[in-house]
Amino acid sequence: MEHEYRICPLCEGEFTLSVNECPDCHVGLVSPSERPEPVAPEAFPEIAELNCVRVGPLPWTRALSEKLGEGAIPHRVEPDRRSESEGGIDPRRFGGEDLYGTWVKSEDLEAARSIDRLLFAPLELEAAPDAQGDEACPACGAVLPVEAMECAECGLSFG
Image 1 (cartoon, helix red, strand yellow):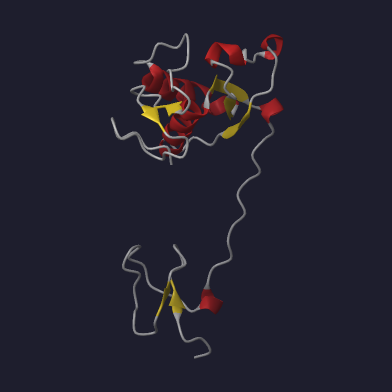
Image 2 (cartoon, helix red, strand yellow):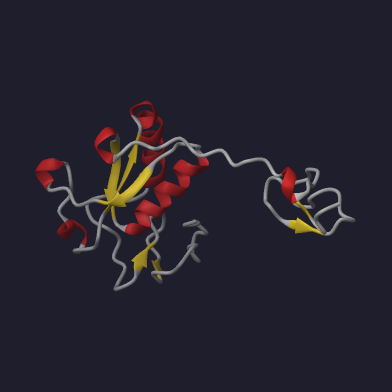
């Protein structure tokens, strides 16, 4: 055998030759030369071809992106620099924070809006939660450090 190790074709973990199955993925291991070629993802359209689901501060955008991902809804998140006349939101509405838009394809718009309504129903959407210099959890409003990946109060993950 030309290689001294095997890999998992799913997670690409490396294992000794004595291991036959990935303990995490539960699939048979292969030699590196047998690894399947990765399939390039379909190119996602530019924002001009998409529909905006929500514009808001980073914690809100993270929460929506996570829920859309859980629902297998492809989406694009980018800073929103549109003027109000172009459909953007005045950043002063959110205390001058940078705002991000979450865009989806037309065929996914209704499903994305449904997820958005469920996620943000408990919030008063007239203003961003007061983060007092940091950020706030979009679900419960708890103050979070900027680098937080999960809310300590309600457990919402910002993966």
